[in-house]
Image 1 (cartoon, rainbow, N blue to C red):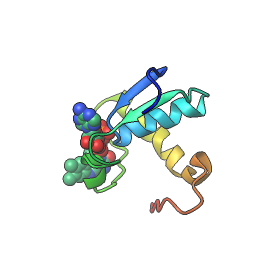
Image 2 (cartoon, rainbow, N blue to C red):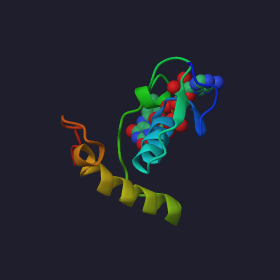
Image 3 (cartoon, rainbow, N blue to C red):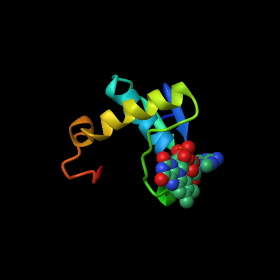
Image 4 (cartoon, rainbow, N blue to C red):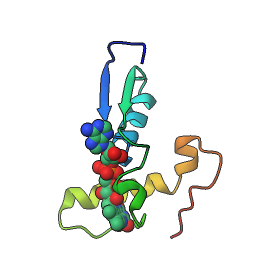
Length: 89
Ligand SMILES: Cc1cc2nc3c(=O)[nH]c(=O)nc-3n(C[C@H](O)[C@H](O)[C@H](O)COP(=O)(O)OP(=O)(O)OC[C@H]3O[C@@H](n4cnc5c(N)ncnc54)[C@H](O)[C@@H]3O)c2cc1C
């Protein structure tokens, strides 16, 4: 690490940290650092079943789920990933 300061530092390279870094970068905020103590997706993210559900107990969570699914349906285009992300509905 040669730099001493960043616009932002994110602790943890799970889905929350990496997607936050991705969304900031998409908006031009590229002067950031993700610090992961182990390896990317070393925590719950790498162990989860990757199931996506739409039914939630609060309106906000339900809205997030619906909007997330719309992103998942076009994830390759959204991220520029050249392979299939494997969504199976
Ligand atoms: C068995 C299992 C099944 C699941 N199934 C589903 C599912 O089907 N669908 C679903 O939506 N959700 C599922 N989940 C929940 C989902 O995995 C989590 O909600 C999500 O991955 C949490 O992401 P996160 O980035 O907050 O945490 P994490 O993925 O745990 O990431 C946190 C990261 O921070 C790092 N870290 C911690 N402290 C520090 C530190 N001090 N310095 C540097 N790095 C640090 C850790 O090493 C880790 O990599 C499941 C979870 C589990 C455990």
